[in-house]
Image 1 (cartoon, helix red, strand yellow):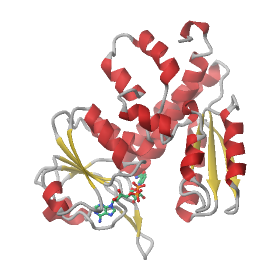
Image 2: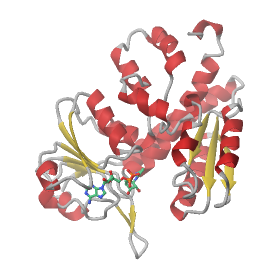
Image 3: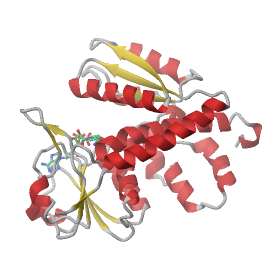
Amino acid sequence: MGNILDGKKLADRIREDVKKEVQALNRIGFDVGLAVLLAGDNPASLQYFQSTLNACKKVGVTAYEFRLPENVTANEILNIVHTINIDERINGLLALMPLPAHINARRIINSIVPEKDVDGLGAISVGRLAADESSFQLFKQNEKDLFQQFRSLSSIWSFLPCTPFGVIRLLEFYDIGIKGKHVVIIGKSLAVGKPLANMFLAKEATVTVCHRETVNLAKFTRQADILCSATGRAGLIRGSMVKNGAVVIDVGINILKDGSIVGDVDFSSVSRKASMITPVPGGVGPVTIAMLLENTVRSAVRNELFKSPLMMG
Ligand code: NAD
């Protein structure tokens, strides 16, 4: 059976580090704040809202809750986002998806200033990742000259979306090489599949992206050294679709009729072929919230850092 990639273990490690950074900031008089906005009462979003608030509490991040009714107008949400954008106590904003159907979600996400877009889904953040200009890529290119990097980042700061960045961090945590590997991603959403493809490309992998119109999915999945599924289709990936020894990352979250939670991957058949595999729950999920906290504390550090005249880019 494949070895388990334990997301909870990595999430605990990230949260411990975040907690220490928050305490260090508190000692010099700075608070770290995250706004969490939920419109309507989608049960999955409500659950994520609560988990985020609990996670903030555990690491000492102050959560600012914005719970809005299903019939909230776009204008009301835009005004709240504007208030958050200019609130010095708040370092990041998570707007939970889906927003009510009458709201243009992209308009809302794009109204968050990039410095507070800790979920990394605004057009600026997405574009910077695609243009090799995210902090992820800049830090990689010239690791020695950190001071210069901070100066250049003062004008082009952005954050990486939490779930795909969590996938990369999970692979790194388990020392799984990415360079030169054939990575097959199933799903091309803005929140997961697309940014994940860009991150793997930045790590010099060969990347194939499949989606619901891909003909003969198994032909592609069988070629994967690293297979990532993010579709929301329970049981989509079966053992026969996976190469022996592949690393399998299951991003999918599906709630079955009996209330149990499974991923996209048929765990029992795939784990017999895979060398390493993420469980659901307990794989990518816990890392996602930990990455949100990490992005928020990075935003707080950056905000304080760039108040220093030395750093003005
Ligand atoms: P989405 O609906 O925006 O995108 C789904 C993608 O899967 C699409 O690109 C679609 O083309 C593809 N797809 C759907 N059916 C397919 C099929 N039969 N064959 C091949 N491709 C298919 O969803 P999303 O926001 O990207 O989320 C995907 C899944 O990941 C969901 O289950 C979601 O709950 C989960 N998710 C988990 C986390 C986490 O923290 N673990 C975070 C975000 C999303």
